[in-house]
Figure: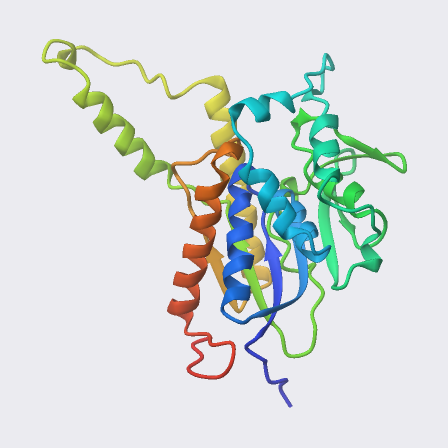
Length: 293
């Protein structure tokens, strides 16, 4: 006999996304506000950080920390490195995170949690279900070329988004739960591009409109960033097909970059709004009522 789902129980999966991942805080807040119970969580990169803070009961403290960030505070956490394989050591960021995330082992958390990282040499997925919570988060957020890779047990670990940006297949399931994924890998680049071109055209006078305009948006860095985003998005979509969630909250944010950590309030609000819309569209009610999934 097929197991009946309990609408109020959720196995939550949080994707990578850089600063856009702060929207995960809003997602969790909205789920709880509507009466849902998150019974397990899995995350990758920023999703691993937010999910880990939630599992440790420190989501409020993390929110207060990120909402206090401005450009000046952000730059104060940048400890540049002279290494050839990363730009930032990441030590200052980790020490700041330790002020809100306790020194605890994953198996002592009140609900099942896992974080995803990538073995750089073997090209294999690494799943953290035990050991230090902070070490698991640090390995999962090691964005290639930006943060110093984490070296653990003879392995070089980098951002989990390289292999599995939406680990739907890794979250621990409990009887009667619903699988809910939050995907922040999609960005409306085409729509954003059209807005940029229109704004540029309005800013040119009649004479310059007749002259060719160099495509200044296409640089080495923008090409690499776009290529990386496309690959991550494709991996997320493949995972959604392999392990289909009961509900997918797909949040596309063309106005925000992966480094907009000083815009936490707005990103969190987007997460809450997107969750309300997704739940309303799916017709899932935590305590009975119409269920569209």
